[in-house]
Amino acid sequence: MNAGASAAAAPPVVSLRGIVTRFGRNVVHDGLDLDVGAGEIVALVGGSGSGKTTLLRHIIGLTRPAAGELRLFGEPLRAGSVHDRVARQRRFGVLFQQGALFSAFSVGDNIAFPLKELGVASRDEIRDLVALKLAMVEMEPEHALLMPAELSGGMVKRAALARALALEPELLLLDEPTAGLDPDRSAAFVRLILSLRRELGLTVVLVTHDLDTLAAMASKVAVLADRRILSYATLEETLKVDHPFIERFFHGEHGRRALARAGRGD
Ligand SMILES: Nc1ncnc2c1ncn2[C@@H]1O[C@H](COP(=O)(O)OP(=O)(O)OP(=O)(O)O)[C@@H](O)[C@H]1O
Ligand SMILES: [Mg+2]
Image (tube, rainbow, N blue to C red; front, top):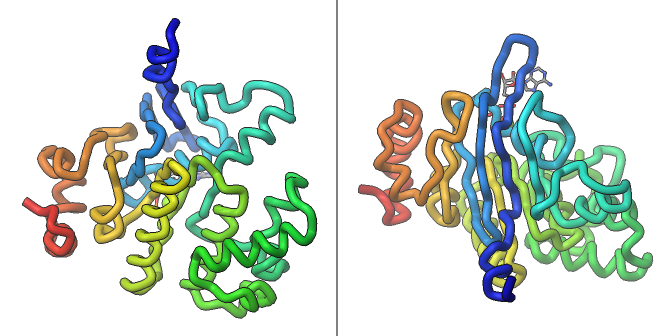
């Protein structure tokens, strides 16, 4: 095989095939497929309880689907030795929907946690990296000393994003990253993610109900409905799909206004 052919065959960063998830009788995913290519910013949308958070938990290996195949960076999620898995973990960062920070650790120790856990940096390097990551999310170095309970909701989100960025991941998984942020902070968040994608070639999967954020940054929209990815396309193409969820989510009063603001409505 020549170099060109192998480059063209670069595997998706995330690949899900035939995912089935059940909690007792509750079938959440039933034959779900999704491929996320390098450099994409995929917005995963779906009704409350449709299984978005659960899907992110599968992708990072926190939970296991009842059936299906899951690949990260072209490799089966659980392939290889412990060492291989730890190496794979270093390649992604996660921002959870809830409980974003360890409450018993300061902000600085929270951000340092993945760095310390993986033993990738010295103490001085860690201190510098913590300050750098705080600056990225527009927080001050002295915020490193605060405890999570001393932060506002928006600051918790930003500190959690700083932690997700600590290892300079190739893949970022974000669950409602802008929920509870004011419009200025949400816009700053969008700018940050877009600049990281430009500079680091970051791939992002984000769950969001925030249409302003979605319209500003998503390269593709994955709609989780009827227990699978019902549609996976650009926002413009997604808007043409005839489905009750898409109708409610994008074409309601609120949705139309958000899309108009972004200049992407119909
Ligand atoms: N650990 C669990 N045990 C039992 N049921 C669960 C568990 N985790 C999730 N579920 C169920 O799976 C379904 C999907 O939940 P999930 O949290 O993935 O939804 P979601 O799409 O993230 O919703 P939201 O938009 O409200 O955050 C729900 O019906 C939920 O009750
Ligand atoms: Mg959720």
